[in-house]
Amino acid sequence: MNPKELIARRVAKELKDGDVVNLGIGLPTMVANYVDPSLDITFQSENGMLGLGPAPEKDHEDFDLTNAGGSPVTMSIGGVFFDSATSFGIIRGGHVDVTVLGSLQVDEEGNIANWIIPGKMVPGMGGAMDLLVGAKKVIVAMQHTSKDKPKILKKCTLPFTAVKEVDMIVTELGVMEITSEGILLTELAPGVSIEDIQNVTEAKLIISDHLKVM
Image 1: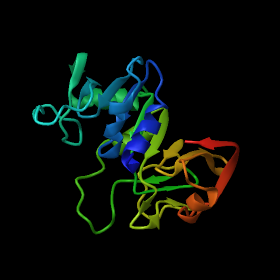
Image 2: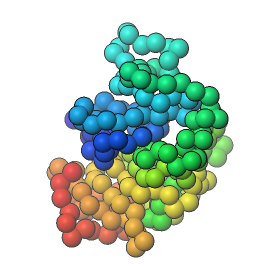
Image 3: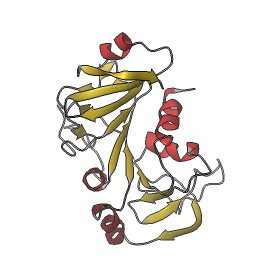
Image 4: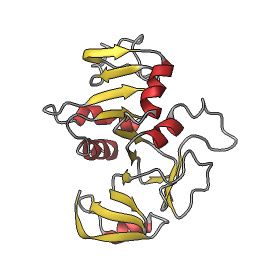
């Protein structure tokens, strides 16, 4: 299993029956492919869609039907479309149960930087700021390092997207929760030791008394 698939499969286990879920662009969109089919999960996209289905099969994409990141999607039976004002009313009104976002950096206070590296051209923040403060639960799904440099830090060095809003981090190495004391390591990926994950994490990890295999 490649790292991104491992992350997406683990995040999918956090979703509960009846949840309204927003998936950020990139890796988070993979989560929809691994949701338990017995669960009633409603996926929302900030460009004005509620009821997204799984990713379309290759060569069967409809490029007039895309998510907020411009990637082709499908719609479930009963799915609806609406304008961006309504979409952000859903987000800002607290009607999204879970948002899953990628990130450039996360720190031990739950601060997140995921929209810009100064000096580089980017399309903009999109709906990330609204999702981070509007969703009831925020899960960061990302690979643990970038070019062998830690992405989980004592303090983010890039411009914040939101402050103290992250609840959980899932990487290919483990599962972590943000607490008032710092980052609590609750699960380790198979074959990964505490030393392995701490060596590539700048923030000091707190080890759960009930640490288990991811």
